[in-house]
Every structure is written in structure tokens, then in C-alpha cells.
Length: 171
Image (cartoon, rainbow, N blue to C red; front, side, top):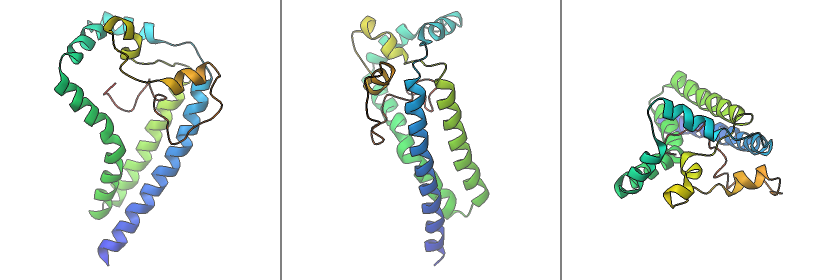
């Protein structure tokens, strides 16, 4: 009985997170469609001023297949990690922490999306694609929306929209 009650709590929070996520995806589509000037070059310059070279990082990254695999796993953890954390917090009866986790997740996602509207960027792999000889990240939806050639918002395929700022560091 205890387990069933706690699983109901987890499912309710997961449902709220999914509904909020769908609303955020719609907002993300709208922000990308604003087509504000990309700030990739400025971000790359700031990183270079701090002594970081994305181009050197890209070459190193491509020469280490295990790192590519590990970053891919970390990147995709977000899809599984959120429901796992919600379920774990619910089962441990950490209701305050559960509420705080979901609230902060939604607020951070909202902030990232709102910032990306007026200050959009792709990512270093796209920016340096020709220099590294590999197009490492598909941004078809992103560029179609910016060109106003996308006529649908496939809510089940939001890949390539959340580019900068991003909720994960695997980019």
C-alpha cells in the first residue's frame, strides 16, 4: 500500500514534468523561429580570450571514441534521469525535495529557452563543421525554423532546438 501511494506521487510529478516539457518545446519552437542573429562567433571569441580552443577540443574529441560514447550516454541520461530522480525522491518520501527538483527543472528549462530566443547559438561542432570535416550534430529543425521553411512543430522530435544555452554540457 505504501509503495502504491508513493508510486502514484511519482507518476503525478512525472506527468506534470511531461506536460510542462511539451509546453516548453512549443515555446522553444517559437523562440527559434524569431530568427535573431546567431551569437556563435562572439561566444567562440570569449572562450578563446579565456584560453579555450573549441577547434582543438573538437579534434581531441574526435580522436577519442570512448569519450564520444561516454558523452553520448551523459547527454541521453537527461531523458531517463529526470523520471528516475522523481521516482527515487517519491519512494524515499522526500516530498519537499521532489517539489523543489521538478520546480527548478522547469524554471531552468524555461530560462534557457527564453534566453535562447534573443541570443541564439548553434554549437561549436556545427560552427566548426567544415574545419573538423564532420557534421557532428543535426540541427535541421533549428535551421528550418530560422529560415521560416518549417510548417510543422513535431513535438515528438525537438532535437536540434535547444542549442544555447543548453541544459546539458555534452554539446
